[in-house]
Length: 231
Picture 1 (cartoon, rainbow, N blue to C red):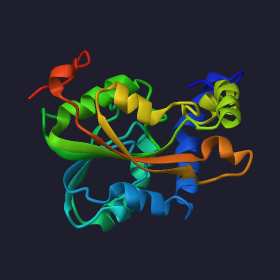
Picture 2: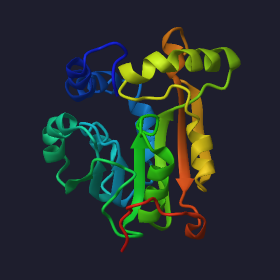
Picture 3: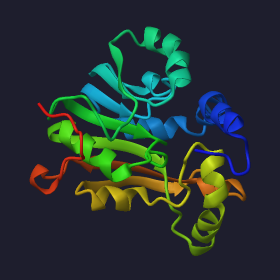
Picture 4: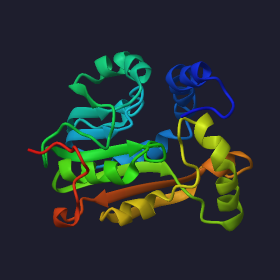
C-alpha cells in the first residue's frame, strides 16, 4: 500500500523491507504470548496459517500439530522464518501469498489459524470463504486479532486514524470488526476472550484484542471466490 505523499520506491521499501521487521518487534513482545497460547489451544493435525509472517507462532503449536501450510505475502518474512521452521521439526510449507486464493483441495486442512493478520488481508470476505472451503467438516478457524474497539471514543479515534494508519501499517485496518466479519461470512463465532491488551493512549487504538474460535460455515451458503482451487 502506498505511503501518503511518498515516492513509489520508498513505499515499496517500507512494505517489503521495513514492515516485516517491525512486525517481528511488535509481535515478539511478551504481551502477546499468552494471547497466542490461548488462541492455539486445541489446534491439531494439518493447519493452515493465514499471515504466517516470520514464524512467531510456531513455538505455540502443540505436538498434535503435524504440518503447517503458510499463506504469507512477504518474501522477507518467510526468509526470516527459516530458523524457527528448522527448530519446529515438522513440515512447514509456504503454499500461497494470497489467502483469498489457496491452491488447496476442499476440506484439506484440519484447522486454520490467524494471529494479527485478518486486520490486514485485502480481500477479507474472499479469504474467509477460501478458508471455509479448505477446512474439513467440523474444522474451525482459531484467531487472535485486534479489532474495532467497543467504546465509542476509541472506535471514533480508530476511524479518524485509519486513512493514515493503513498505509503506514502495511494495510492494517484499525477499525475492522473481526468477529462481525466472521459472522457475516457464515462462521459460528465463539469469542473466548476480549480485552484491552494495551489500555493506555495512544496505543489503545490498536489494543482491543479478541480470541475467537470460528466454526466452519455450511458450505451450501458459501459462494467460492473467482479463481478458487477445488478438489
